[in-house]
Amino acid sequence: MAGASEALFAQPLLLLGGAVIAAPIFRKLGLGTVLGYLAAGVVIGPVLHLIGGSGDILAVAELGVVLLLFIIGLELKPSRLWHMRRDIFGLGLAQVVLTGLALTGMALASGLLDWRAALVAGFGLALSSTAFALQLLGDYGDLNSRYGQRSFSILLFQDLAIVPLLAMVSVLGTPSGDADQSALVQIGIAIGAVVGMILAGRYLLTPLFQVIGRTGAREVMIAAALFVVLGSAYLMQLAGLSMAMGAFLAGVMLAESSYRHELEADIEPFRGLLLALFFMAVGLSMELQVIVDNLLLIGLAVPILMAAKALVLYILCRAAGSPHEDAAKVGLLLPQGGEFGFVLFTTAAAAGVLSNAQSSLLISIVTLSMALTPVSAILGQRLLKREGSEREQMDEDFEGAGSDVLMIGFSRFGQIAAQILLASGRDVTIIDDNPDRVRQASTFAFRIYFGDGTRLDVLRAAGIERAKIVAICTHKKEVTDKIVDLIRAEYPDVRLYVRAYDRIHSLALRARDVDYEVRETLESGLLFGRRTLEGLGVSEDEAYDIGEDIRRRDEERLRLQAQEGIMAGRDLVHRRPVKPEPLIKPKRAVKSQPEEDAAEA
Figure 1: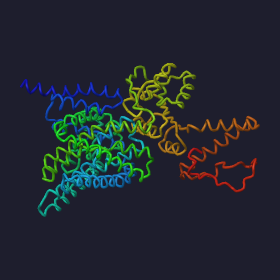
Figure 2: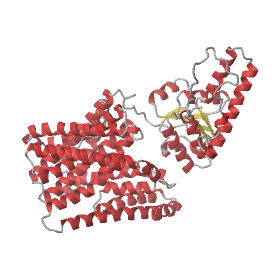
Figure 3: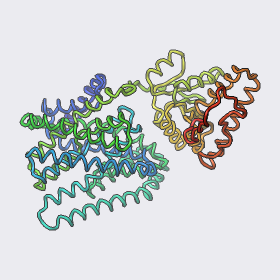
């Protein structure tokens, strides 16, 4: 009994200790926490042999990937997912097919595999690691960037592709005539499971959380969230799909629920811990002896694999319209093998398509490519001169927070607005997620706290429940919209004053019923124009009247555009002087800029 109890506590203590030691060191070195977890796993397992048999640990740790996909699903409303369909089913399909065929050709050319084994190896290695890529995107804060969304679309299709690939293994490994029928049955079951999941999410999940929410018991809500995530993942696994796909679908179905922000806050701690465990389990599973015995082959195969995948990804992204920098970042983020490769190669070995030695060799190649992924991603970020390195973190301490005004974001716009409020004697609580800005503002005696305004727990800690007005002064549209949606869902009675990026953003904010919005360049542009008129000899009163006329026309145009669309109110725009007096008469008329290119006008 004592021995069993000792074993029960020894392994978790080793893993937690390894994570606590390795992650801060690797983050401080600029290599990222993922590589730190991998290194800790390698040291604990293959090097020191403190933990053996990583299979069970890896099985549990895969729940981290499941929870990660659920949280991502919560951020993707079905309408947004529909907008990504071209990248998912166009770019994602092209990547799997072209990369799979290219790697299959290379495997055949090596002479080490027959055509069946080469086909499984090629398409298995074409899959990338969802866990690694999304964790790195999260570390860089790039999940909502253009290249981040394109990378996610490719990964999402790869998760879908595991079903036909497993069916392909079944066909290749089954000599009887029932192979085609069993493959079709498997695909039919998978499609039926997806449809059933969508229907259950639409008609069952939201009512379920409404009932549980009325109880007011937070622990019951957490239990229900975990039950939904793990239950949907398990059902998808029974249907032949990946567990991650089931969790993702559950998240998407709850993306428009009023409970999604609370669910995200409840799941986040479990996701972070289990995902760290997943990376450590990958390190634990590395078979150093297999690598040593096939050192030359693996030493050639891993860089060739990563280079080939990166090249195909780069070419496809460029063909799909991505700029050079984004295409290169996608290529350097997704060149590795994926965790679903483990499943595919193990299944192929059981079906007799691959030998056990070949399966172990391919799994070693996948694992080593995973280990090198953080290095390639960091290299890509630095070579492409990404603005800002990994952001420094600070402790979140909200002691003393809570004022009539809660300001989110403290860049130049927020700093000016805050000075007016403070000059009137009002108290303002400010949160910002830039450590340097927080430190600098603190030296000027601003009440500013480090925190991410997109997190519900941070808003609560900063005193949103006591705030009469929330001033959202963030400078990225995507972040602003996320905060507005979060606050509108959780605190519908709070008055929102929001900084808008441009005219289109102003219209979008008005559609969200914010109490006040202003384009960040409107007032400065009007003032600049007035002062320029005065410099040309126009009286101050006349310049003011002209500016107010422009303001009135702009407001009227916004009102019309909100009702009739962006092209409404064009007659209200002053395109040229009433009495043009050009210094040099033009030889031919110059075409005016199209209305759709003047979002700031």
